[in-house]
Length: 184
Image (cartoon, rainbow, N blue to C red; front, side, top):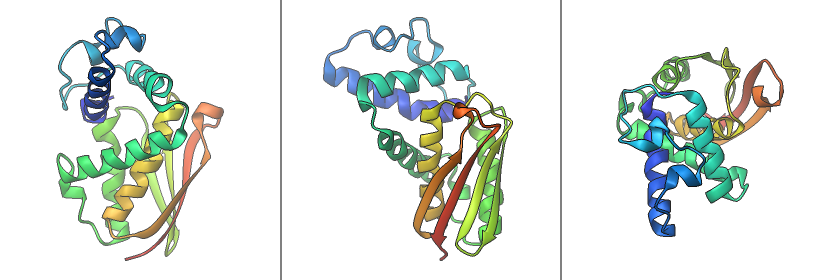
């Protein structure tokens, strides 16, 4: 997982730990010796996906209280932050086809495994498919759900709804997100 997808989560966890008075966050999250929590996370550095997944599980257990919408909100915040900053060149696409191609390229900015494909089935409906990434953690899929919604809204879509119909963490061969929206 690229630091781009990790850095905001680490900042969030460290703020939470300071507020809770937790000195050893790595120990609290079961991540002793983790490259992610042991030093400064760099946006351009690759980190082991399993450490990212462990961080997500720690957030679920220590902070989110099992609320799946917590991760969807994190995904929305991540999209807004990234599309305002590092990925700003993708944030202004108005033509759906061009926007979808741009979003498909963004996956490689986060993860070095798998591909993302976005298909528009009709105006106001699309399918986002993640293939070749059999290791995705369920929390990551929830983040992706929020990221997809927020990024499409950035592209001009209104009333975006995203459902996660197939998931590798539940034994499927790929993750499939069905999306409906009112085009701009």
